[in-house]
Amino acid sequence: MPHGRISANVHSPTVGVVIDMGNPLLNRTVDGFLKIGTVGASRVLVEETYSSLSKGSVTKHDLEHTIKKMGIEGLKWGAVAGVYTGVEYGVERIRGRRDWKNALISGAVTGAAMSFGDNKYTRDKMIKDAITGGAIATAAEFIRYLT
Image (cartoon, rainbow, N blue to C red; front, side, top):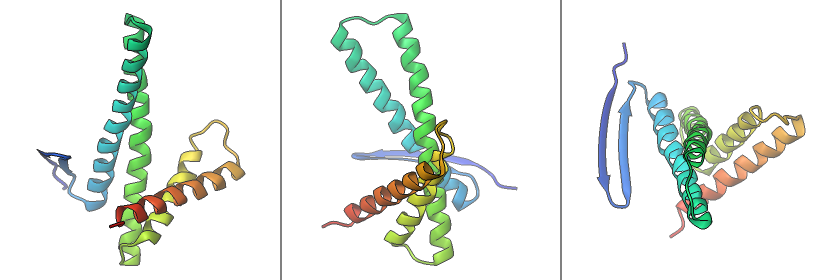
């Protein structure tokens, strides 16, 4: 039976939180979900703080709206990251290599999968989302290795 373990460290500029789910695929998926979900929620917090400062007041309704929006965005960003990292790990294991092609495939699968959650789903939109996801992931992979 798998066991869980949590470990954390902070070294500027990186933050490491490891949750051991007993399976490398689950570890990467949960890690991606948590880290990127936190980024998505933080983005909303900063955006809403700026909005409140701009208008000069904060109401209880504003705070409730911000918290709800943080949860929704955190889940969305985390889901995208979890799917992407899980698929990338699986593709890497199947292909036996770690290169830009894994990012391309993972981005395309993630883009296509995320279009299913949209209430304006069409086949054409799914294909466009797959192309966009693959392009963004591949570009990020290329940028990662620039020297």
